[in-house]
Amino acid sequence: MAKRLLLVEDEPGLVLTLSDLLTAEAYEVETAGDGQTALDLASQDDFSLIILDVMLPIKNGFDVCRDLRQKGIRTPVLMLTARGQLADKVLGLKLGADDYLTKPFEPPELLARVEALLRRVSTEHPGSASQFKFGSVTVDFRTTQVRFRGRLVELSAREYQLLCYFIQNSGTTLSREQLLREVWDYEAEVQTRTVDVHVALLRQKLETDPKNPVHFLTVRGLGYRFVDHAE
Image (cartoon, rainbow, N blue to C red):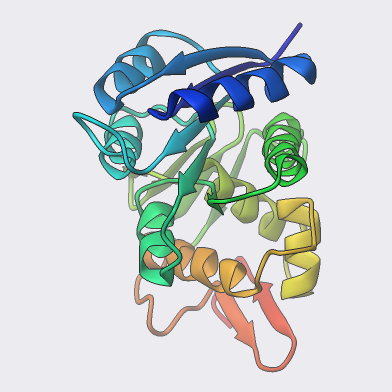
C-alpha cells in the first residue's frame, strides 16, 4: 500500500514539482496551501508523513506543528524552511518536528529525508516487553506513550525513536555519528549538533533535573550513554 504524504506548501510551482517527484516514487500525495487547511487535514486523515513549510498563510508551520502535537497527533513532520538560523531549526524541533530541510534543496536530499523518517516509523519497538520503566518514566511500546511521574509527555517521533534506541542499547556508550547513522538513517549533511539538541530535549522532558541528568549521560569526547538507574 502506498504511503500517504501531506505536502503543505503555498508556492504553486514547488507544489507541482514536489508532488511529481514524490508521486514518481510511488507515494500518494495530498496537498494543502495554508496552515489551517493542513491542520484540519492532518487532524482528520491518517498520513504517514507531513512535509511542512514554515512560511504559510493563515497559520505558520511552527504553529501547525505545535497544534498537531498538542492534539496528540504523532505523524512525523519534516519542516521546510528558507531560514538558515540555528534558532529557527531548534524551535521547530522543540515544537515537535522530526527533521528539517533548508531551502533550496536538491530532490534526492528530500527523498532521502522522507525515506529515512518512514523507515524509522516502521521500525519495530525495542524488546519483547510491552513497557519499560526507568526512574519516573514509563514507556509503553504498544501505544508509543511516554509518561513522566504519571503524566503524559509529548515526544516527537524522532525523540521517541532516539529514546527507543537508547533503551535498546542501555549502558552502551554511543557516538554521535552512530546515533546519526542508526536513528537518522543517513550520515551526510546532518550535523552532530542535531543529536545534541534531541538529547537535550529528552533531558528536559524526562529527567528530574535536566542540568544534572542521571539517565541520559554525556561521555566526554565520545558521545552519550543511557542508564536505566542513577549512577
